[in-house]
Length: 61
Image 1 (cartoon, rainbow, N blue to C red):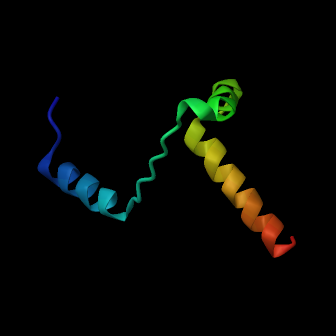
Image 2 (cartoon, rainbow, N blue to C red):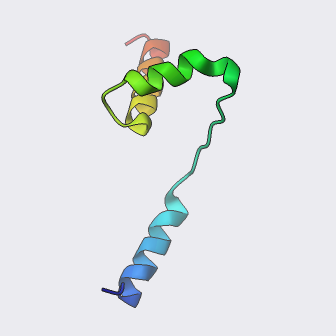
């Protein structure tokens, strides 16, 4: 099943709004790798939650 041209254009427009973030984990980051393997939620969700908690803590809420 092929993607309709209008859907292809909509996806391309949406991707323009998305910001990608990449992280490299080195052998010295074993603790971080282990933690990411242990969590039960997607890595992206986990990282976003940690950042939001940090923002909230910084604001004093």
